[in-house]
Image (tube, rainbow, N blue to C red; front, top):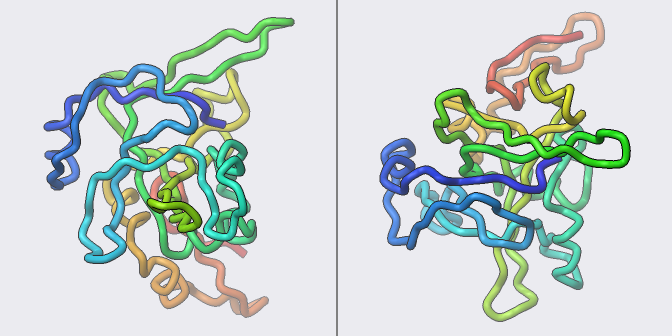
Length: 212
């Protein structure tokens, strides 16, 4: 899972990296926690232009009766995004990139838990795959998000069995594409044995592989 992360990178570096502009106030953050506002890149829902904005961490589905549900939805398992009622609509059309440059994970050591700070070797920023929603039952409406998790890679597996989905380069831009589901279906190949589409886009790298 992902319950704490950091964003220490200067704003001008992030803006240059993602070719966006913003008037947001900025300061380094070393221990970002659930329910706080976090920086995300998304397609503006009105103009479809890419933007940097702040969303509440802990997704509140549009149908929820109480915002407290967000405390349970800070993470979303990649394996069930398309089927879980809390995430399936956002998975289709409300995707985002959560800006980060490190995250914390805790390893059970007997009765205690040992914290680990996980980051790139050169400390460069990266993004988590995320989803966002708009909850209109309050004034003003609340926009919130969740961080998608997957099975840990070889580096993180010794600490925890889950980790955030980290995207880079083209994979990150593909994740933001509203039409990715339509394009995935159009480009998929059909297996001659079972006549089912079998092309999978990997959440880790955005690459395609064929399975049967």
